[in-house]
Image 1 (cartoon, rainbow, N blue to C red):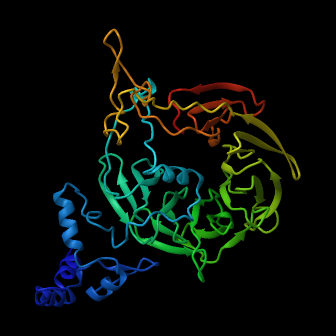
Image 2: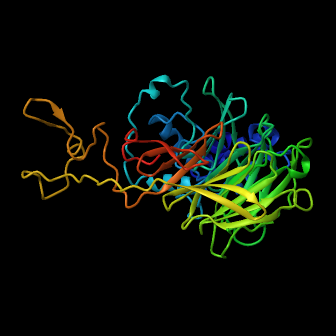
Image 3: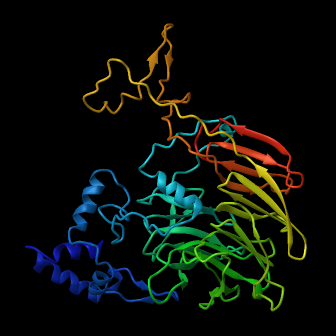
Length: 469
Protein backbone atom coordinates (compact mmCIF):
# COMPACT_ATOMS: atom_id res chain seq x y z
CA UNK A 1 0.00 0.00 0.00
CA UNK A 2 2.85 2.39 0.81
CA UNK A 3 4.42 1.59 -2.55
CA UNK A 4 1.16 2.28 -4.40
CA UNK A 5 0.77 5.62 -2.59
CA UNK A 6 4.31 6.70 -3.47
CA UNK A 7 3.83 5.45 -7.03
CA UNK A 8 0.63 7.47 -7.40
CA UNK A 9 2.30 10.63 -6.10
CA UNK A 10 5.41 10.20 -8.26
CA UNK A 11 3.98 12.06 -11.25
CA UNK A 12 1.66 14.97 -11.82
CA UNK A 13 1.05 17.96 -9.58
CA UNK A 14 1.79 15.99 -6.38
CA UNK A 15 5.27 14.88 -7.42
CA UNK A 16 6.98 16.96 -4.73
CA UNK A 17 4.83 15.30 -2.04
CA UNK A 18 6.23 11.90 -2.99
CA UNK A 19 9.85 12.77 -2.12
CA UNK A 20 9.39 12.94 1.69
CA UNK A 21 7.51 9.63 1.62
CA UNK A 22 10.23 7.94 -0.41
CA UNK A 23 12.94 9.21 1.95
CA UNK A 24 10.92 7.93 4.90
CA UNK A 25 10.63 4.49 3.28
CA UNK A 26 14.41 4.38 2.81
CA UNK A 27 14.92 5.17 6.50
CA UNK A 28 12.30 2.64 7.63
CA UNK A 29 12.56 -0.43 5.38
CA UNK A 30 9.70 -2.15 7.24
CA UNK A 31 7.31 0.15 5.34
CA UNK A 32 7.94 -1.93 2.18
CA UNK A 33 7.65 -5.71 1.74
CA UNK A 34 11.02 -7.52 1.85
CA UNK A 35 12.38 -9.42 -1.12
CA UNK A 36 12.69 -13.16 -0.49
CA UNK A 37 15.15 -15.10 -2.64
CA UNK A 38 14.82 -18.73 -3.71
CA UNK A 39 16.70 -19.90 -0.58
CA UNK A 40 14.20 -18.19 1.72
CA UNK A 41 16.55 -15.36 2.72
CA UNK A 42 14.98 -11.93 3.29
CA UNK A 43 16.51 -8.87 1.67
CA UNK A 44 15.80 -5.20 2.21
CA UNK A 45 13.81 -3.59 -0.57
CA UNK A 46 13.37 0.02 -1.70
CA UNK A 47 11.01 1.95 -3.92
CA UNK A 48 13.22 1.81 -7.03
CA UNK A 49 13.66 -1.96 -6.75
CA UNK A 50 9.92 -2.53 -6.40
CA UNK A 51 9.20 -0.28 -9.38
CA UNK A 52 11.66 -2.28 -11.53
CA UNK A 53 10.25 -5.65 -10.45
CA UNK A 54 6.64 -4.55 -11.10
CA UNK A 55 6.82 -2.69 -14.41
CA UNK A 56 3.15 -3.40 -15.18
CA UNK A 57 1.89 -1.42 -12.19
CA UNK A 58 0.84 1.96 -13.50
CA UNK A 59 0.87 5.14 -11.47
CA UNK A 60 -2.94 5.07 -11.48
CA UNK A 61 -3.09 1.62 -9.89
CA UNK A 62 -3.99 3.02 -6.45
CA UNK A 63 -6.93 4.86 -7.99
CA UNK A 64 -8.17 1.67 -9.69
CA UNK A 65 -7.84 -0.27 -6.43
CA UNK A 66 -9.93 2.29 -4.55
CA UNK A 67 -12.57 2.31 -7.29
CA UNK A 68 -12.79 -1.47 -7.14
CA UNK A 69 -13.14 -1.34 -3.36
CA UNK A 70 -15.99 1.14 -3.63
CA UNK A 71 -17.73 -1.07 -6.20
CA UNK A 72 -17.71 -4.02 -3.79
CA UNK A 73 -14.43 -5.90 -4.34
CA UNK A 74 -13.35 -6.57 -0.75
CA UNK A 75 -9.93 -8.10 -1.52
CA UNK A 76 -7.16 -5.50 -1.46
CA UNK A 77 -4.74 -8.10 -2.88
CA UNK A 78 -6.69 -8.47 -6.11
CA UNK A 79 -8.63 -5.21 -6.50
CA UNK A 80 -8.09 -2.89 -9.43
CA UNK A 81 -6.90 -3.52 -12.94
CA UNK A 82 -3.95 -5.81 -12.22
CA UNK A 83 -2.94 -8.48 -9.75
CA UNK A 84 0.46 -7.84 -8.19
CA UNK A 85 1.50 -6.10 -11.36
CA UNK A 86 0.33 -8.81 -13.74
CA UNK A 87 -1.77 -8.10 -16.76
CA UNK A 88 -5.16 -9.51 -17.73
CA UNK A 89 -3.79 -11.66 -20.52
CA UNK A 90 -5.33 -15.06 -21.12
CA UNK A 91 -3.70 -18.25 -19.80
CA UNK A 92 -0.79 -19.51 -21.83
CA UNK A 93 -1.62 -21.87 -24.70
CA UNK A 94 1.18 -24.11 -23.46
CA UNK A 95 -0.97 -25.42 -20.62
CA UNK A 96 -1.88 -28.95 -21.72
CA UNK A 97 -3.08 -30.61 -18.55
CA UNK A 98 -6.02 -32.67 -19.80
CA UNK A 99 -8.51 -31.66 -17.12
CA UNK A 100 -7.62 -28.00 -16.58
CA UNK A 101 -7.46 -27.40 -20.34
CA UNK A 102 -11.06 -28.55 -20.71
CA UNK A 103 -12.16 -26.40 -17.79
CA UNK A 104 -10.36 -23.33 -19.17
CA UNK A 105 -11.99 -23.81 -22.56
CA UNK A 106 -15.38 -23.57 -20.89
CA UNK A 107 -14.49 -20.31 -19.21
CA UNK A 108 -16.43 -17.54 -20.89
CA UNK A 109 -17.53 -19.72 -23.81
CA UNK A 110 -20.51 -21.76 -22.63
CA UNK A 111 -22.88 -21.61 -19.72
CA UNK A 112 -22.07 -24.80 -17.81
CA UNK A 113 -25.13 -26.63 -16.67
CA UNK A 114 -25.69 -26.34 -12.93
CA UNK A 115 -25.59 -29.75 -11.26
CA UNK A 116 -28.84 -30.65 -9.49
CA UNK A 117 -28.87 -31.69 -5.85
CA UNK A 118 -29.13 -35.43 -5.19
CA UNK A 119 -30.05 -37.40 -2.10
CA UNK A 120 -26.36 -37.82 -1.25
CA UNK A 121 -25.91 -34.07 -1.58
CA UNK A 122 -28.22 -33.56 1.37
CA UNK A 123 -25.58 -35.09 3.62
CA UNK A 124 -23.23 -32.17 2.96
CA UNK A 125 -23.40 -28.56 4.00
CA UNK A 126 -21.19 -25.58 3.32
CA UNK A 127 -18.70 -25.05 6.13
CA UNK A 128 -16.78 -22.00 4.97
CA UNK A 129 -16.41 -19.88 1.84
CA UNK A 130 -12.92 -18.78 0.85
CA UNK A 131 -12.63 -15.63 -1.24
CA UNK A 132 -9.35 -14.16 -2.41
CA UNK A 133 -8.43 -15.20 -5.95
CA UNK A 134 -9.15 -12.76 -8.74
CA UNK A 135 -9.22 -15.28 -11.58
CA UNK A 136 -10.38 -18.92 -11.94
CA UNK A 137 -8.96 -21.59 -9.64
CA UNK A 138 -8.27 -25.02 -11.16
CA UNK A 139 -5.90 -26.55 -8.57
CA UNK A 140 -7.24 -27.48 -5.12
CA UNK A 141 -6.05 -29.97 -2.48
CA UNK A 142 -6.15 -30.58 1.28
CA UNK A 143 -3.04 -31.08 3.37
CA UNK A 144 -2.52 -34.40 5.18
CA UNK A 145 -4.23 -33.17 8.35
CA UNK A 146 -7.31 -31.77 6.61
CA UNK A 147 -6.88 -28.48 8.49
CA UNK A 148 -5.54 -26.58 5.48
CA UNK A 149 -6.76 -26.19 1.93
CA UNK A 150 -4.36 -25.09 -0.81
CA UNK A 151 -5.46 -23.46 -4.06
CA UNK A 152 -3.59 -22.47 -7.23
CA UNK A 153 -5.10 -19.94 -9.59
CA UNK A 154 -4.80 -18.23 -12.94
CA UNK A 155 -3.87 -15.05 -11.04
CA UNK A 156 -0.39 -16.65 -10.58
CA UNK A 157 -0.93 -17.06 -6.81
CA UNK A 158 -0.97 -20.05 -4.46
CA UNK A 159 -3.04 -19.57 -1.30
CA UNK A 160 -3.28 -21.58 1.92
CA UNK A 161 -6.58 -21.48 3.84
CA UNK A 162 -7.86 -22.67 7.20
CA UNK A 163 -10.62 -25.23 6.55
CA UNK A 164 -12.29 -24.54 9.91
CA UNK A 165 -12.64 -20.75 9.63
CA UNK A 166 -12.01 -20.05 5.94
CA UNK A 167 -9.34 -17.50 6.87
CA UNK A 168 -6.36 -16.96 4.57
CA UNK A 169 -3.16 -18.28 6.19
CA UNK A 170 -0.60 -17.58 3.46
CA UNK A 171 -0.29 -16.19 -0.05
CA UNK A 172 2.65 -17.68 -1.95
CA UNK A 173 3.91 -15.34 -4.67
CA UNK A 174 6.55 -15.79 -7.33
CA UNK A 175 5.05 -17.42 -10.42
CA UNK A 176 4.84 -15.32 -13.57
CA UNK A 177 2.11 -17.34 -15.32
CA UNK A 178 -0.91 -19.48 -14.46
CA UNK A 179 -0.53 -22.20 -11.80
CA UNK A 180 -1.12 -25.56 -13.52
CA UNK A 181 -0.68 -28.07 -10.67
CA UNK A 182 0.14 -28.35 -6.96
CA UNK A 183 1.33 -31.30 -4.85
CA UNK A 184 2.23 -32.14 -1.23
CA UNK A 185 4.81 -34.61 0.01
CA UNK A 186 3.78 -37.50 2.25
CA UNK A 187 5.34 -35.88 5.34
CA UNK A 188 3.19 -32.75 4.87
CA UNK A 189 6.26 -30.52 5.03
CA UNK A 190 6.79 -29.40 1.42
CA UNK A 191 4.41 -27.98 -1.18
CA UNK A 192 5.31 -27.88 -4.89
CA UNK A 193 3.53 -25.61 -7.36
CA UNK A 194 3.96 -25.90 -11.14
CA UNK A 195 3.36 -23.06 -13.56
CA UNK A 196 3.19 -22.33 -17.26
CA UNK A 197 6.16 -19.97 -16.74
CA UNK A 198 8.43 -23.04 -16.86
CA UNK A 199 9.21 -23.27 -13.14
CA UNK A 200 8.29 -25.40 -10.14
CA UNK A 201 8.47 -23.61 -6.80
CA UNK A 202 8.87 -25.61 -3.61
CA UNK A 203 7.55 -24.06 -0.37
CA UNK A 204 7.75 -24.83 3.34
CA UNK A 205 4.16 -25.74 4.26
CA UNK A 206 4.44 -24.55 7.87
CA UNK A 207 6.10 -21.17 7.30
CA UNK A 208 5.28 -20.45 3.65
CA UNK A 209 8.91 -19.70 2.87
CA UNK A 210 10.28 -20.70 -0.56
CA UNK A 211 12.78 -23.54 -0.47
CA UNK A 212 13.88 -23.71 -4.10
CA UNK A 213 12.94 -22.90 -7.68
CA UNK A 214 13.28 -25.67 -10.27
CA UNK A 215 13.71 -24.45 -13.85
CA UNK A 216 13.17 -26.88 -16.71
CA UNK A 217 15.00 -24.74 -19.28
CA UNK A 218 17.58 -22.38 -17.85
CA UNK A 219 18.53 -21.23 -21.34
CA UNK A 220 16.19 -20.25 -24.15
CA UNK A 221 12.42 -20.02 -24.25
CA UNK A 222 10.68 -21.40 -21.17
CA UNK A 223 8.44 -24.44 -21.63
CA UNK A 224 5.39 -24.67 -19.40
CA UNK A 225 5.23 -27.22 -16.58
CA UNK A 226 1.98 -29.19 -16.78
CA UNK A 227 2.20 -31.43 -13.71
CA UNK A 228 4.10 -32.08 -10.49
CA UNK A 229 4.09 -34.99 -7.99
CA UNK A 230 6.09 -36.17 -4.97
CA UNK A 231 7.30 -39.75 -4.76
CA UNK A 232 5.91 -41.53 -1.64
CA UNK A 233 9.14 -43.52 -1.19
CA UNK A 234 10.52 -43.98 2.34
CA UNK A 235 14.28 -43.94 1.59
CA UNK A 236 16.25 -40.88 0.50
CA UNK A 237 17.52 -42.50 -2.71
CA UNK A 238 13.95 -42.83 -4.03
CA UNK A 239 12.55 -39.47 -2.91
CA UNK A 240 11.82 -37.38 -5.99
CA UNK A 241 9.85 -34.37 -7.12
CA UNK A 242 8.58 -35.40 -10.56
CA UNK A 243 7.55 -32.82 -13.16
CA UNK A 244 6.08 -33.01 -16.67
CA UNK A 245 7.01 -30.32 -19.16
CA UNK A 246 5.70 -29.09 -22.51
CA UNK A 247 8.86 -30.36 -24.18
CA UNK A 248 7.53 -33.92 -23.72
CA UNK A 249 9.98 -34.89 -20.96
CA UNK A 250 9.64 -35.75 -17.28
CA UNK A 251 12.24 -34.59 -14.80
CA UNK A 252 12.98 -36.17 -11.41
CA UNK A 253 14.59 -33.98 -8.70
CA UNK A 254 15.90 -35.64 -5.55
CA UNK A 255 15.00 -34.04 -2.23
CA UNK A 256 16.11 -34.52 1.37
CA UNK A 257 13.60 -35.03 4.16
CA UNK A 258 16.01 -33.89 6.88
CA UNK A 259 17.19 -30.69 5.11
CA UNK A 260 13.95 -29.99 3.19
CA UNK A 261 16.19 -29.26 0.21
CA UNK A 262 15.77 -30.22 -3.45
CA UNK A 263 18.62 -30.94 -5.86
CA UNK A 264 18.71 -28.55 -8.82
CA UNK A 265 20.03 -31.15 -11.29
CA UNK A 266 17.28 -33.47 -12.54
CA UNK A 267 17.19 -36.98 -13.93
CA UNK A 268 15.50 -36.67 -17.34
CA UNK A 269 12.98 -39.36 -18.31
CA UNK A 270 11.81 -39.54 -21.93
CA UNK A 271 8.59 -41.54 -22.10
CA UNK A 272 7.70 -40.54 -25.66
CA UNK A 273 7.30 -43.09 -28.41
CA UNK A 274 7.52 -40.33 -31.03
CA UNK A 275 9.14 -36.91 -30.91
CA UNK A 276 5.83 -35.09 -31.31
CA UNK A 277 4.26 -36.80 -28.27
CA UNK A 278 3.60 -34.91 -25.04
CA UNK A 279 3.22 -36.20 -21.49
CA UNK A 280 -0.46 -36.31 -20.56
CA UNK A 281 -0.21 -38.03 -17.16
CA UNK A 282 2.32 -39.68 -14.84
CA UNK A 283 2.26 -41.45 -11.46
CA UNK A 284 4.30 -43.29 -8.81
CA UNK A 285 3.17 -46.52 -7.17
CA UNK A 286 2.61 -46.58 -3.38
CA UNK A 287 6.27 -47.37 -2.57
CA UNK A 288 7.88 -45.12 -5.18
CA UNK A 289 9.61 -48.13 -6.74
CA UNK A 290 7.78 -47.74 -10.06
CA UNK A 291 7.13 -44.68 -12.18
CA UNK A 292 4.69 -44.65 -15.10
CA UNK A 293 4.35 -42.06 -17.89
CA UNK A 294 1.42 -41.73 -20.33
CA UNK A 295 1.53 -39.73 -23.56
CA UNK A 296 -0.86 -38.08 -25.98
CA UNK A 297 0.07 -40.77 -28.51
CA UNK A 298 -1.60 -43.44 -26.36
CA UNK A 299 1.59 -45.07 -25.05
CA UNK A 300 2.45 -45.96 -21.44
CA UNK A 301 6.06 -46.36 -20.28
CA UNK A 302 6.84 -48.02 -16.93
CA UNK A 303 10.15 -47.48 -15.16
CA UNK A 304 11.68 -49.36 -12.27
CA UNK A 305 13.53 -47.28 -9.68
CA UNK A 306 15.22 -50.40 -8.21
CA UNK A 307 16.45 -52.21 -11.33
CA UNK A 308 20.13 -51.19 -11.48
CA UNK A 309 21.42 -48.35 -9.34
CA UNK A 310 19.02 -47.42 -6.55
CA UNK A 311 17.01 -44.40 -7.67
CA UNK A 312 18.09 -44.58 -11.33
CA UNK A 313 14.98 -45.17 -13.48
CA UNK A 314 15.21 -48.00 -16.01
CA UNK A 315 12.56 -48.70 -18.65
CA UNK A 316 10.96 -52.11 -18.01
CA UNK A 317 7.89 -51.90 -20.27
CA UNK A 318 6.39 -49.73 -22.99
CA UNK A 319 3.04 -50.57 -24.53
CA UNK A 320 0.55 -49.07 -26.92
CA UNK A 321 -2.15 -48.77 -24.28
CA UNK A 322 -4.82 -46.88 -26.26
CA UNK A 323 -5.55 -45.74 -29.78
CA UNK A 324 -5.74 -42.07 -28.75
CA UNK A 325 -4.48 -39.71 -26.06
CA UNK A 326 -4.49 -40.97 -22.46
CA UNK A 327 -6.21 -38.64 -20.00
CA UNK A 328 -5.55 -40.29 -16.63
CA UNK A 329 -3.12 -42.84 -15.22
CA UNK A 330 -3.14 -44.15 -11.63
CA UNK A 331 -1.71 -47.13 -9.73
CA UNK A 332 -3.86 -49.29 -7.47
CA UNK A 333 -3.42 -48.96 -3.70
CA UNK A 334 -1.14 -52.01 -3.52
CA UNK A 335 0.83 -50.92 -6.61
CA UNK A 336 0.30 -54.17 -8.52
CA UNK A 337 -2.14 -52.81 -11.14
CA UNK A 338 -2.23 -49.73 -13.34
CA UNK A 339 -5.43 -48.01 -14.52
CA UNK A 340 -5.50 -45.85 -17.67
CA UNK A 341 -8.28 -43.86 -19.32
CA UNK A 342 -8.34 -42.44 -22.85
CA UNK A 343 -10.35 -40.07 -25.00
CA UNK A 344 -11.13 -43.06 -27.23
CA UNK A 345 -13.88 -43.92 -24.72
CA UNK A 346 -12.14 -46.86 -23.04
CA UNK A 347 -10.23 -47.56 -19.85
CA UNK A 348 -7.84 -50.44 -19.13
CA UNK A 349 -6.38 -52.15 -16.07
CA UNK A 350 -2.83 -53.41 -16.62
CA UNK A 351 -1.26 -56.24 -14.60
CA UNK A 352 2.33 -57.42 -14.90
CA UNK A 353 2.40 -61.11 -15.84
CA UNK A 354 6.17 -61.37 -15.66
CA UNK A 355 9.09 -59.71 -17.38
CA UNK A 356 8.13 -57.11 -19.99
CA UNK A 357 4.60 -58.48 -20.49
CA UNK A 358 1.60 -56.58 -19.16
CA UNK A 359 -1.92 -57.97 -19.59
CA UNK A 360 -4.93 -55.68 -19.91
CA UNK A 361 -8.61 -55.80 -19.01
CA UNK A 362 -10.64 -53.33 -21.11
CA UNK A 363 -13.71 -51.35 -20.03
CA UNK A 364 -15.78 -49.66 -22.71
CA UNK A 365 -18.10 -46.83 -21.70
CA UNK A 366 -18.74 -45.52 -25.19
CA UNK A 367 -22.40 -44.79 -25.82
CA UNK A 368 -24.37 -42.68 -28.28
CA UNK A 369 -23.88 -38.98 -27.53
CA UNK A 370 -27.00 -37.14 -26.33
CA UNK A 371 -29.03 -35.28 -28.92
CA UNK A 372 -29.01 -31.58 -28.12
CA UNK A 373 -32.44 -29.97 -28.04
CA UNK A 374 -32.34 -26.74 -30.01
CA UNK A 375 -34.82 -24.00 -29.10
CA UNK A 376 -37.64 -23.62 -31.65
CA UNK A 377 -38.58 -20.11 -32.76
CA UNK A 378 -42.12 -19.03 -31.98
CA UNK A 379 -44.23 -17.59 -34.83
CA UNK A 380 -44.32 -14.16 -33.18
CA UNK A 381 -40.61 -14.14 -32.36
CA UNK A 382 -38.83 -10.91 -33.23
CA UNK A 383 -36.65 -11.70 -36.24
CA UNK A 384 -35.24 -8.23 -36.65
CA UNK A 385 -32.87 -8.31 -33.71
CA UNK A 386 -31.55 -10.43 -30.84
CA UNK A 387 -33.90 -11.60 -28.13
CA UNK A 388 -33.96 -10.03 -24.72
CA UNK A 389 -31.46 -11.50 -22.23
CA UNK A 390 -34.15 -13.24 -20.20
CA UNK A 391 -36.33 -14.34 -23.11
CA UNK A 392 -34.94 -17.89 -23.28
CA UNK A 393 -35.12 -18.28 -19.53
CA UNK A 394 -38.88 -17.76 -19.34
CA UNK A 395 -41.15 -20.73 -18.85
CA UNK A 396 -44.36 -21.49 -20.64
CA UNK A 397 -47.67 -22.62 -19.15
CA UNK A 398 -49.62 -25.64 -20.25
CA UNK A 399 -53.36 -26.02 -20.50
CA UNK A 400 -53.67 -26.80 -16.79
CA UNK A 401 -51.83 -23.62 -15.89
CA UNK A 402 -48.72 -25.46 -14.71
CA UNK A 403 -45.30 -24.13 -15.53
CA UNK A 404 -43.08 -26.15 -17.86
CA UNK A 405 -39.48 -25.50 -18.84
CA UNK A 406 -39.07 -24.49 -22.48
CA UNK A 407 -36.72 -26.18 -24.89
CA UNK A 408 -33.73 -24.02 -23.95
CA UNK A 409 -33.86 -25.43 -20.41
CA UNK A 410 -33.63 -28.90 -18.95
CA UNK A 411 -35.83 -30.38 -16.24
CA UNK A 412 -33.74 -28.74 -13.51
CA UNK A 413 -34.19 -25.25 -14.94
CA UNK A 414 -30.57 -25.11 -16.05
CA UNK A 415 -29.51 -23.78 -19.41
CA UNK A 416 -28.53 -26.31 -22.08
CA UNK A 417 -24.92 -27.09 -22.86
CA UNK A 418 -23.39 -27.35 -26.31
CA UNK A 419 -23.95 -30.65 -28.14
CA UNK A 420 -21.37 -33.39 -27.54
CA UNK A 421 -19.74 -34.71 -30.73
CA UNK A 422 -18.43 -37.94 -29.19
CA UNK A 423 -18.10 -39.66 -25.83
CA UNK A 424 -14.67 -39.52 -24.18
CA UNK A 425 -13.32 -41.00 -20.95
CA UNK A 426 -12.05 -38.15 -18.82
CA UNK A 427 -11.45 -39.45 -15.28
CA UNK A 428 -10.64 -42.85 -13.75
CA UNK A 429 -10.08 -43.83 -10.13
CA UNK A 430 -9.66 -46.84 -7.85
CA UNK A 431 -11.94 -47.73 -4.97
CA UNK A 432 -10.02 -47.66 -1.68
CA UNK A 433 -10.02 -51.46 -1.35
CA UNK A 434 -9.04 -51.99 -5.01
CA UNK A 435 -12.11 -54.12 -5.79
CA UNK A 436 -13.66 -51.61 -8.19
CA UNK A 437 -12.55 -49.05 -10.75
CA UNK A 438 -14.64 -45.92 -11.33
CA UNK A 439 -14.82 -44.33 -14.77
CA UNK A 440 -16.55 -41.13 -15.90
CA UNK A 441 -17.10 -39.53 -19.28
CA UNK A 442 -17.96 -36.17 -20.81
CA UNK A 443 -21.74 -36.72 -20.97
CA UNK A 444 -22.37 -37.25 -17.25
CA UNK A 445 -22.03 -41.05 -16.98
CA UNK A 446 -20.23 -42.70 -14.05
CA UNK A 447 -19.67 -46.47 -14.06
CA UNK A 448 -18.01 -49.05 -11.79
CA UNK A 449 -16.25 -52.21 -13.03
CA UNK A 450 -14.55 -55.25 -11.57
CA UNK A 451 -10.82 -54.76 -12.38
CA UNK A 452 -10.12 -58.51 -12.63
CA UNK A 453 -12.99 -59.68 -14.84
CA UNK A 454 -14.09 -56.47 -16.59
CA UNK A 455 -17.69 -57.03 -15.44
CA UNK A 456 -19.76 -53.86 -15.21
CA UNK A 457 -21.10 -53.51 -11.66
CA UNK A 458 -23.28 -50.44 -12.17
CA UNK A 459 -23.70 -47.42 -14.40
CA UNK A 460 -25.39 -44.12 -13.57
CA UNK A 461 -26.33 -41.36 -15.91
CA UNK A 462 -28.68 -38.44 -15.34
CA UNK A 463 -27.61 -37.08 -11.97
CA UNK A 464 -25.32 -34.67 -13.83
CA UNK A 465 -27.55 -34.17 -16.87
CA UNK A 466 -25.23 -33.98 -19.87
CA UNK A 467 -22.51 -32.09 -18.02
CA UNK A 468 -18.97 -33.40 -17.96
CA UNK A 469 -17.98 -35.16 -14.74
